[in-house]
Image 1 (cartoon, rainbow, N blue to C red):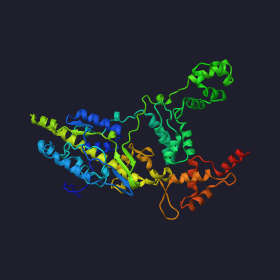
Image 2: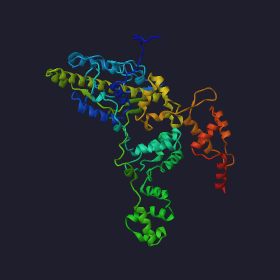
Image 3: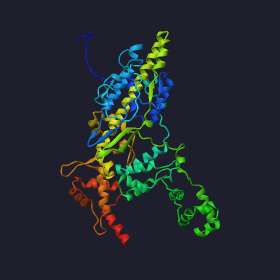
Length: 527
């Protein structure tokens, strides 16, 4: 068979990951601190960008109401947007009118894998989905051209930029929390308690308020706290200095009745009343000297030792409050939302002084990148609000009745409801927080697995099933201990279709002994 050259025409589709598209993905998954740092760098590199005056309002205001399964949409949202566009239309400087642009940039192409089936990434003039209370700058509305060599179009990071940073105290505690607890209910309680730590690692506030806020048993909060007090650094989650020192002494196996008496009388140690201390502790001078020396080796501020700088307080991205008629009102937090605009007067002024092709190309690139950033920030804010609104709708039972009413929820449920891709929902829920009447939670904490219903009804959250198993065991009589088979029978009567091995797995994950061990323990306590 003879070899010969041939020209074929083939048609195919592919997604080109341009530098700006890569940066758009990064913007979506940035938390508010990372986004603020990125905006600061853009303000330094792009002379056409300015930080918006907090006193100005560049967009619509209002609330997104979530109730009875729907998100409220105020008709003023689109009207305010259109009025603003009309006012800007006569005197604004746009890339297409003044400097001339090339082909449409990467933000004008459909990217279903990034933002779901919404067509263009930043459609001009599209009304915001929901009437949200946040500011979005629309300084210039030209099409975002494809810029090159700018900060917003940077290539993937080099190897030296991918090295892991040193973990903060909160990151370390979050990692330990996920290793210690397998069920979302206790993880949520643990996350709530982590947020209550001060800069020294002490637990502030009353844990009874935690039980009230989450509508769960106080005994469960205490049980979670006990396990949190075993985390590194040793001494964390103490409620006072004496408890902090006690945790460290227990870790060293040096906590005895004499040490307990010493910690109960730290005021005498501070006043150097050693004679009274000897009598209280029942030790001689040498023993007291050794005990005081051990105390001085302990760390009274374990939180500062573990993290050089105090962990910054969590700034929620979304604020939630109760509305009328059983609805929930959501708004974006202005403190977590960067506000930037394009300095049109400065852009017009320097465009009149352009002298050659290179200067015109530089100005064109900066204006295109500024347009892209403004539009990308708007899309990011809209996407966060859509996801948060749907989560509130899906988990209304939790906000109304407490943690035992968490519904089974996965990323696909939210993605299908709002018409976006699962990867988009995953990026939005990671590192984004919502302030609710029950506390501040990361959006990802509202996702739990499902347990089928025995009667064909709605599925049950694995979280609520675990809660029910513990409730049944806590209420069992000493002479009538519930076996795993009996628990399965009781749960199936309540409409929960669950296997015996699943009950055993949940019981072991909650560190509840078997029925045989529980029977022995209760007999021993009764003797």
